[in-house]
Amino acid sequence: MFFWSERVTGPRGAVIDCYFTDREGGVSGGDVGSLNLSGAVGDDPGNVEVNRGRLASAMGIERSRLLLMSSRHSTTVVPVTDRSPEVIADGMVTATPGSALVALAADCVPILLYDATVGVVAAVHAGRVGMADGIVAEAVQVLRREGAQQIHAIVGPAICGRCYEVPADLQESVASRWPVTRSVTWSGTAAIDVPAGVVWQLAQEDVAVRWLPGCTREDPTLFSHRRDRPGGRGAGVIVMREAAA
Ligand SMILES: [Zn+2]
Image 1 (cartoon, rainbow, N blue to C red):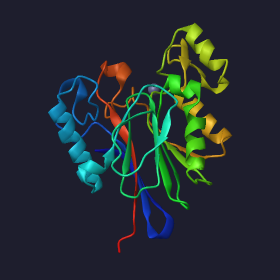
Image 2: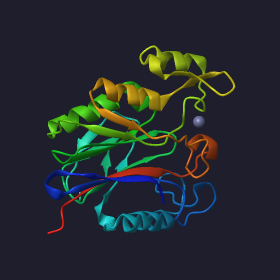
Image 3: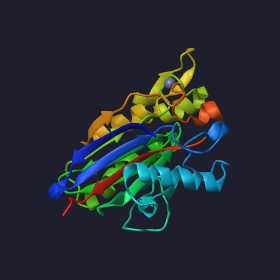
């Protein structure tokens, strides 16, 4: 179920729980097996819903508290409140306890952000396009607008710079703007390191970053769009929980 999870102490006795899922523990079959969380990859909608229910249950929350977004490789980051309808965006920010923000990804970079002192959290989906267009800076800006001051980020498993082969002209167009993303594959051809770009951009924004090890394409316990075509989607999830009364 969980590739990685961690609890952070939040404000006034609250806690902030951060998770990245793996492929295990769901009911989907084949390339989307088993814990696919996306309704947009051809999986049976009933299976997706069971998987989302199992995720909520493993986190100890109600299914209705999982807030999903419809990702578009945009730089749109929106503040959401309790029980917001599904938004079209690539990032969500909330200060509402109990609402679990879900960023789906499989090779793209899931990013969880929080200010544990103020009590505001965010989940972001950053692929090549979103990273290059500036979704990281946008997410930080929206977080600060919502009161965040000291922001921490956890960068989840994504396709690594050795596995993300691209045509040389595409590499050039991205690397000319973000030199840290210039990479080569295991076989020496042109590649882009999207997570390296995300981490560098976060650092530029004075965010304290932790970059988790793990390449989605190389680790068979994680979903990879490039390997599985199209394959399922895992998630980064962040939720703030109020202190027990
Ligand atoms: Zn890799």
